[in-house]
Length: 125
Length: 108
Image 1 (cartoon, helix red, strand yellow):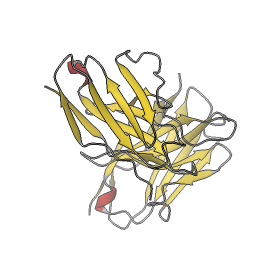
Image 2 (image 1 turned 90 degrees about the horizontal axis):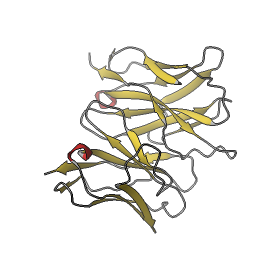
Image 3 (image 1 turned 135 degrees about the horizontal axis):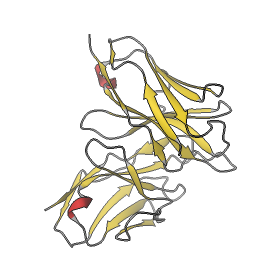
Image 4 (image 1 turned 45 degrees about the horizontal axis):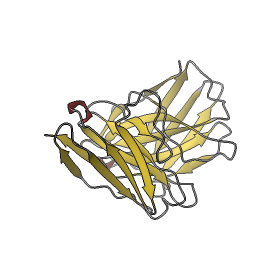
């Protein structure tokens, strides 16, 4: 069955850029039936959608993060990635990669059906 | 920016029924989804498209929608239902996914 696995640094310095990669195994990222997204959760707080990408490269971002976020896809490696610039302590969180279904109209709003295990990222000098 | 509003916490005795609400202006036009999250775990969807229960989710979980509010109902609450619950939807244009702030369910 399909699995997602995040990889990247657990510690980032303030003002630096976070780069995370999600590797998809057990299935293809090049499916027209899914978006691939990033969601984060600060310690003790709620979930925040960061953004999602379609295999073709179409992206949607949280407006509050849009100026700092880039999500990209590498179909040859079956991976998608998150880049978040100008990190601050407020970006300290568990970062999840996730898959959510879509339909023929590429509707963004559907439930996440597969989550990565999550990776803790701490912003500290 | 668009927001979904949930009560921060609810508490209920075992065997009772509890309802968790989620309010947002675009909910009449966008489906809502509900997740259950237990400590240290990724969320699990318990209700899809306002009221559909995924396979494997107990029948005591149900969802409904009325205007700008969607409701998650848990009937006959069990101790194992103690968790955080989040609603998810999108803004009216469907280009921005948003989560509610979460509701902590305590089983007394």
